[in-house]
Structures are given as C-alpha cells and as structure tokens.
Length: 223
Image 1 (cartoon, one colour):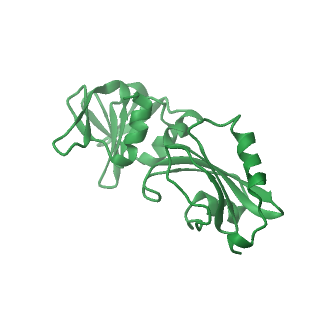
Image 2 (image 1 turned 30 degrees about the vertical axis):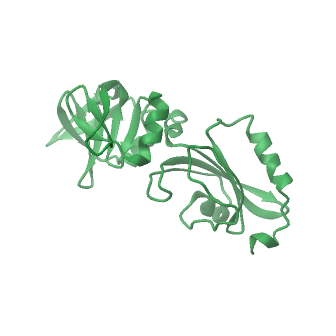
Image 3 (image 1 turned 45 degrees about the vertical axis):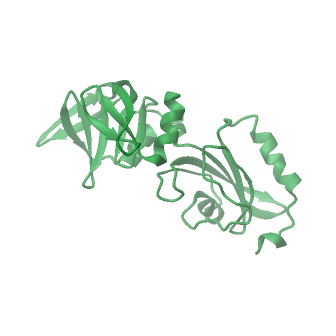
C-alpha cells in the first residue's frame, strides 16, 4: 500500500511524539513505519535522516517489527545507515493499520541498560585468565578474532566486538569497526597528517577513530 493512500493524519502521529518526549532522551529520534514505508520521522542531530515516504530497509528494525509484531532491540554498526545506533521497536496500530514505532538512540545507550561485564576471561595458548574489566585498555577485532589487552599482554576471547559493545560498562567506547577503548586509558586525542582523529593510550598504542564513531566520542568526552 502506498503512503499517499494511507489515511494517517500527522496530528495523530504527533501524539506519539508528545507522549514519548517526556520519557526518552533528547538525543533520541522517533520514526513510525506502516506497510513498508516511513510515515513519520522526528530526528535528532545524532542520527541518520530518514524521509517520510522512504521504503523500510529489509534489514532494519522497522522491518523486523512489522514482520514479527514483537518488541525488538538492536545494536547496529555503521554498515547499514553509515552511523552506529541502538534502537528499540514496538508494534503499534495507527488507524487500524499495523505499524512499527521506532526509537533510535546513540549506540552508547545499549551499555547503560544492560548488566555490564565485571571481567573477561582471556586465552593465551592453553591457559585461561579472568581479567577484571577495569584493567583492560582496549579490545580489537583482527582477522575475524577478538583480542583484548591488559598490562601489555594480549588475550583472545570468543566474544565479538558487537556482542561486547552491548554489555561493557559505560567507560568503554567503540571508536572504530575494529576497536573499543577504555576511556580511562586515553592519554590524548589528536589529528594525524590527514586530519583524521587518533587516540593515543597511556601504554603508547595509537588507534584510529572512524568518522562513523566520532560523534559518540565527542558526545561522551565533550570536546
């Protein structure tokens, strides 16, 4: 069904926004999708910009909610819309049409609503060592494996960066598709010769900051 044929009044959709604004953070975006198209969008400056009438991407949270009619949560990297985000979708009805209400938040919110890891168990050859989470300086995805670093030692874990990102405490921040850092280990933030940001850790390690994650970094560290 085409959007122009849907008898949806903007005033009715605005009611959802009015109610939610008292409960959700100011940096949240709100979207409503019906019959495979977005019919309402109230963006924040932190997120990608949808257009009313735009088709729902088949891999998006809106598509999942419309097909399953269940509350859905996802943490997405920058591969789908160019910026990482955390989103919650709810099945609703608008004018007796099945719809999806989507709340989009910065990706950092996911770690605040779930119980965080207290330690990670890392492997070195045939030995396993539990490492307190606050002692880990950074985590890296390399050659389809995940490694974390503590006191200049390198440990392997079977948990992916995407999984870790949802359950690490708020002092951990993803800065790149391949890196998560502990902000307490940051020595300085600078620009390289190409004006891209890099982070130097206290142990001398330098890591690049992806443009997709720069907004989260600026928001958390306020620079």
